[in-house]
Length: 404
Image (spheres, rainbow, N blue to C red):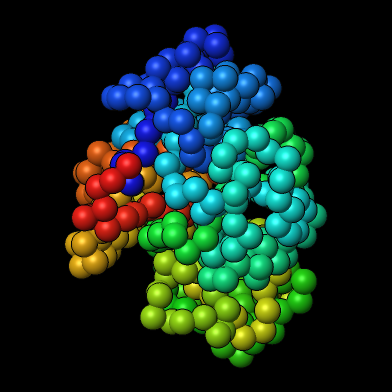
């Protein structure tokens, strides 16, 4: 298989942007006649998602398109936000190796979709790329339920729509759906990693008591007491019941990028390390009852570690996952056909310091590979919804496979 075709463009006029995108997709040889297309547009083009898809279908009639609008879009070495922009990739995959779906919780296939890839599609479901509506009820449960329907349990994708709730998604046609995307069979080989945008502030703990979105005790001790100890708050302040006094004593410089807590199930492999924690915001403290409110529903026995957004740690961790992927490619004599990247809206220029810096790290470590993706309200990997992370997924094939 050849490397995937990809392109990106920005222009205030949606049609001009789409024409520029299609020119890039068609460059470098005969236009692709079949495949799975990934299309992402920024919020300024959200209402034109269907119009762009129509033009793409006319130009590439054998390609079936999935996608959505998002806070921003990205491609090889570049990112766009706050402007009218789009990015797309045509994945030339084996006939029948993938299938488009949409639905609230399960794999409802669009059997009416046109194109040769839909007509002979397999029902096997090994992995899936998924786009999720952030306002969907029981979203985390829906993602876990979808993962449970896959042979590998592996999802990659993110929460779409940007700041516009209930935005349309593209799944062969326009849909308003909790979940949509495409499933792949075993012929589509993927390598994937999650990279964190946060760094731990101290050691991990075990949640010994919790209720609703409150952590009451960590390691058998009052949760607030453990937090203050981890932050090296003066001993004379730790026992205070005065909330203002406690807040004044917190290390402002260490927490300038926020205070979060990373959570991991008790039964998850500890060897994965902090990269597998799902990070959620600490919402508040209760000095009287010595507990913490967080933006999650913890469970007794979960592991927890306090953390904060950190540019240096984010750069180092992104380099780490790229290095791991490169080593895996070399060890197994694989080459990259294309890449899909979903990054938190709080990353990108905000975290890495310059437009395109985050994607530049990927290109520097993995080369100028075809890549498209978007900036999300939350990132999906395996069966979980993450935050402040990046999810990098590579479509790969054996190096000796150089056929069409």
